[in-house]
Length: 114
Image (cartoon, rainbow, N blue to C red; front, side, top):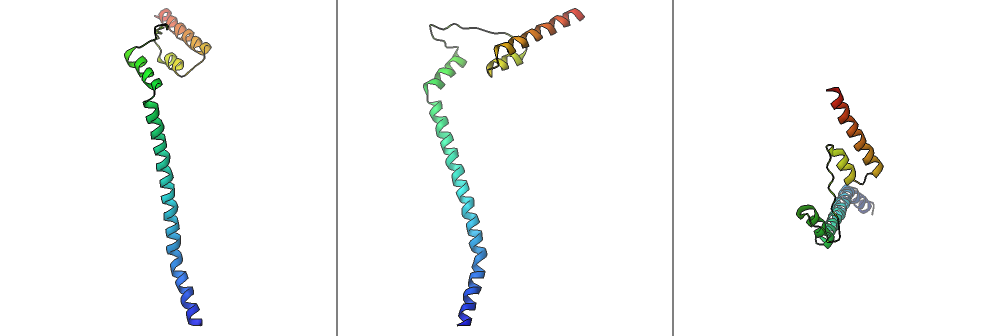
């Protein structure tokens, strides 16, 4: 009986590292599965957006200069790309005007110094 118990304990001790390693591999695989599922859902959402009418309309406006008949088009020309970037990212009107004012003052200062 003691020999049998000794064999069972030895067997359990020998299988423990393999069990721990297998559990770690299982956790790793579960994480990879979750990442792949998330990536697939992101791709699905992107695909839905690329097939949507709003995306097509935006691309037509950007690349083909499309506008609706009841819309007016305003072109803003600036020497400073920061002003354009502020307008694209939704900067406030006062900040854009302030930036344009500073650009104008710098230009005039450059003319006066020459």
